[in-house]
Every structure is written in structure tokens, then in C-alpha cells.
Length: 357
Length: 261
Image 1 (tube, chains in turn blue, cyan):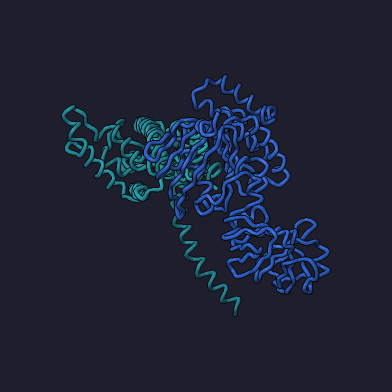
Image 2 (cartoon, helix red, strand yellow; image 1 turned 90 degrees about the vertical axis):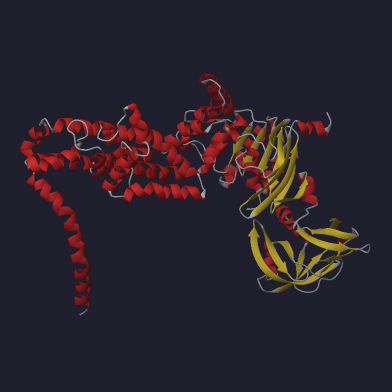
């Protein structure tokens, strides 16, 4: 089957609407079985996109087509209860007065399936998320991770063609999150519909999604596979998410890269014209005096922040070329790195990557 | 000196506070003191009391059911809508709360009376609403419904609106959502709304006597009977009043114990 016809049976959406302050214009396509990770800063339009796909919010323009069926074309639309859609939100939002089994059976029951059949289906779904023994529990008797899994089972019990997960792991503590993430990944591999996963945790996106869409200020700023996004971020936000220093710059054939703020970076991988340049924080070394020898880039910068992260420290530097450097805790004490002090930052030209903007 | 100043300010606030408390409590104490406890059972068994008691119970029950059936959907619309018109509807709804009940009675006459806004179309069919038991129910509903709707609307606003979004993506229509999720989750609010509305209907006097009159067995509810008995046999009036007071305290106790904090 060609890619186009596969998308025809998957998700094809162009979402345009304004909600509050923000004008959203987001295009999303996916083949059946794919997981699209939607990332972006809060208030950027992620949840609005999800609610429009669910039919809770109405498109001003655009379209939502799923599995070859038109859900919304900007004028006519199917109500949420008419769409083959599953929705799971951050707080699992189980119906507090219903047992886990009846929460999961709620969808099939609402769609006209008989009581026994719906309960059988619910039992199967609970088993798939490893919770067959908690069928009789009320939501408040379940741990937050179990609640999330019940919510996932509930969303999938109606055989949705489109599964919407809006920050499904955000309300969990770090331990539970890691376990629930792998449970979620296991369940999603067996799911043949399209999944749209909204998150601001890059780890969720990288481990669960086939494609990433970055939505900032209501617009898509980058689209690609996790590998593409990791190596070539194309907005400041994406750069932060993937942990690279990113500069919008002008490059020439001699390996000189001029940043918008007037900084000069030297690279061994020149690209001419408008470029993005990246510097990995781990490639930055800090020195008290002007470094001797091989590094081609050396800037005198001021320390703006020092934060610890496990066994290393991240040093925020401002000046000609604003940088985040990752150094060992020893060098923090050895160099006496303190906020407000000046320091030399060195980066080898081979560590600077450039690619067209 | 400072001690005296503090004492003076305590008195300046304490005296009016005590007066306020006395104004509220003394009448209740007086009622209890005047009661002839041994006579209460026989007083309540007199031929005028039993029909009034039965009428009060039936009309207030019907009022409660009307509140439940009609008021719950209204509360839901008010709770979920963010339109400007909603706040006008809500404001309109509070008017009967503060309106003198007699005025309510006059308004009901203008609506359902022989030449009233709606009554004029009923007259040709021989249907007459004023001065019937139906009129009692209408008067009680007019004064009680706002209490119910506002209580239930408040409870429904407390629900996470995303619950409804989830229910709808699962395939639930509005009615199914309300029946299976919305109402079960606001049952405490519905119960306290019903208790408030029922208590208000039970005490209804002004609108009833204006719109429904004072006919024994047909429109004479307990409060109307108290008024009549005060002229005829004050001791019976006191006995009925004691009973109504007991019911009010009971409702309050139920509300405080379970739903009001």
C-alpha cells in the first residue's frame, strides 16, 4: 500500500480554531498503528488540538478525517459520542462512583453493547493492562499508576480509530511514571489505530512516539522522527527539549557562523546561508584562563546559573554566545564556578554542527 | 487603663451581639414554654389538623418531585453554560427568593387566574387553577424551586467538566451522562437542595393564601391552619407550631450532619 492511501485509513487533520488568546493552526497526519508525539510549551495549543480531535471543541476551519470518515470539515461535524475516539487525560478522571470494571465497560455500554458482553470486554481490557485482579476496586482504592492503566483500558474498550492521550503520565510520581510508561508502550504496540500523545516530557515522546510534532504558539514548529529531531532541532524550544545549545545564524564557506546576537562560532562542518548551529553542552569545557591548544572557539562569558543534575552540573553562561555547559561537580569546585563570575568557555570546531534553516 | 479600654470595647460589641442573639432565640423559647406538651398529641389529632397535615405532606412532596424532575435539568444547563444569558437566567431565578410571597401570589393569580396570561386559555375548557390544590402546589413550587436549582447548580459546577468530555468520547449522550455520572456524583447536592426546597414549601404562607385561598381540606396547609387557629384556639396553634419547628430543626440537623460543613 502506498503511504498516501495508508494515511487515508489513518489520521488526516488540519485544525484551525481560536481559543482564548491563542490561534491554533496545526496539521497532523498519521498511518494506522503510529504514535504521534505532540510536544510544546504550556498554553501553546496542544490540549486545544486534542479537544478538537475529540470533538469537544469545534473547528473554525480545516478538517478531521479518521479511517476515511469525515469527523469535521469546519461546517458539519460529528459529536464526540459519534466518533470512534478514545480520550485519556492527565488525572485519569475515572468515574469515582464506579468500580474499575464498570469504568472500562462504560464505553461499550454507552455504545449499545449489552451488559454481559460489555463486562466481558472490560475484563479483557483490564487483563491487557495487567489489572484483572482489581476489577472490583473503586478508583480511590487504586494507586495513581493503576488509575492511569484503568483509564487507558477504558479509552481502548470502544475500539477507537483514534486514541488521544493528553499528558497521560504527568500526574504520576517519577517511579510510577517509569513503570506506567513501559506498560503504556506495551499496550500501544498491540493497538492498531492512530495514537496522538500530548506530553511535555521528552522521554515520553522519545520512548513512545514514532513521529514528533512540536506545537508552539498554535503553530507546528517542527515535525519528524525522534532521531531527526534529536540531531537537528529547529526552534529554541525544541533545542531546550533535546538538550542542545541552538543558534539561528548565518554561515559562510570558511566555517564562520555568525549568530543573530553578533557572536562568532567556528565549525568544521560549514553550511552556507541561513543555518542552525548546535553545540552539545557536554562539549563545552570551562577554564579560568584563555585556553591553549586545539579548541577553535573560546569565549569569555559570565555565569548566570549553576544547577546540579545527578553527578554533573549545568552552567548557564551569558555573553557573546550564550551557552549551557555540562561539567563535572569536581570542576565546579576546582574552578570555583559561582554565579556572577567570568569564565572562559571552549568548544572544538568539530563539535559544532550546522544545517540549513 | 488598657485593661479598662479593652473591657469597654468588649461591652460595646458584646451588648449588640447578645441583643441579636436574644431577638432570635427568645421567640423560640417562648414558643416552647407556652407549649402544653401533654396536650400536643390530642391537639394534632383534631379534625382540622389532620386534613391540613395530609394536604401539606402531599403538596410539598409533589413540589419536591417537580423540583427534582424540572429543576435538575435547569441546574445542569446553568452549570455547564458560560454564556452571558446564563447569568441573567440565574439572576431571574433569585427573584422569587427575595420577592415578598404575597407578591408571588398576586403574580401567580395574574398568570393562572380566570383572565390570566395562561388562565384565559384554560377557562374555556372549564379548568380553573386558583383556589385549588393545584394552586397550592404551584405556589409552593414558585417559592421553593430556586432553592433547589441554585443548590444543585452549585454542586454540578463542582464537577470536573473533563469528566463530561471523557463520558462523551466514550459514547454517552447528554441524558446518559447525567443519569450515570452527573447525577450520581451530585447526589449530596440534590439531597440538600430537596431538603431546602421541601422545608421552604412546607412553610409557604403568603403566596398560598393569596393564590389558593384558605379552604379546609383543599388549600388549607399547616401554616394557614396555624393562622386560623390562633384566633380560635391558640393552644392548637402553638402545638402545630411546635411540630413545624421540630420538622425544621430535623431538616437542619440532616443538612448539617451530612452535607453542610
